Length: 521
Image (cartoon, rainbow, N blue to C red):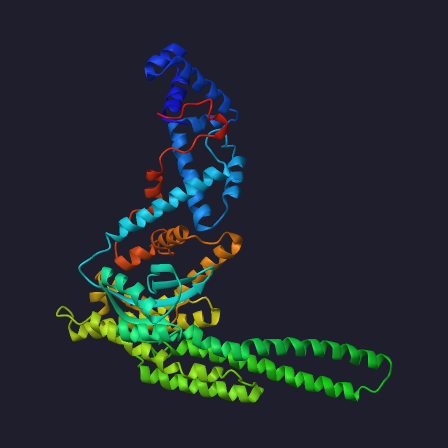
């Protein structure tokens, strides 16, 4: 369906009928060409909807449909070209456009090339006078080759996810140095697992704190208690079921049941102790999550690293007591591994408060306003952020209570009516609240997404990985309607899909009509 074909279609469907000769003169092509086009149009128009695809409006919508399907399913979701070809065939589009698997692959490759071009074009617009202050997350994931990931945790913007031969300090430094200079990045702190190369990268090269990932640290406790206790509970429940059935049988046969009753009593006590251990273990995990915050969840007062460290030390003692009560053997020294990280976890509190202090230290902000921002507005926004972010119902309820208390405290402050309407303070508080990052869950989620795509049997090529990075940064949106790039750079960007559609040009012609239609315009 080239331009000429659409022109001929509009003429032959106009109220005033024209002959082949007249159409030939109007379009300035030979009569034989007009005849071939007309014949092809009639051949294509087999179904009720076929008329619409021949119109200018219908063809424009068809281009958007094809590009959208390949963009979302072919690139983002990793659906194969054969499946997409089958889908277009079911929509009865094979008489209007090329929908073979080979054609779909070519369109997909073209789109990925355009996505990479789009990404380079947008990166050139990122350069700004002010430096970017970020809380960085580093990690690696393994497919056919190793992929290193560097992300700004608050915004979710991926600076790079690229293949690498190794994950040494020198490799990380080389990859990050160029990015840091290009975007003028000021690293406030980094969050990562305890890989020596990543710790050295933060401390020596980036000159900032390296914060242990709270998720990885607490996972040591999960590995020690969670799986063992749940398996033990299931095993005891099964033994109790069998013992109760045997007891009932002994009663029926009028046999001695005292020994079986003793066994059941012992199993019930052990089952009760295991259930109590699971409850205590889950409570400790929840308490651990409630401790590591810049504000006390009960009093809403400002916390320091020293305060949080003392609370974490107390948590370690509770874990040791529980281990002893349940008789669990810690062969792999998981409690020690967790204990070695609590000082680093606690150091995040002071690092974040220092960042807050720096952001409000200017001549326009007096001490009274500064106190209102840090001790009244920020707690309310912070706990609301945690409520929206948390999925665990018990933690969400605790955070909601803290938010309601902080909101009430904010409303009762005499300065609130004066400053709450000023547009700059609420965005500032939201930005600072998002900058408190204690895990690399955003990076882990991204790795999981890539892993799903990789293990569907198609792998991830270099170009596709770059395309997926650009889609993540410039197309995927959170509930507030912002992309990662918008959140980091504080401005709007051209929609990548619209940009690509404008670049793609006409759709390929159907294979079975190649000999009947002249598609060039």
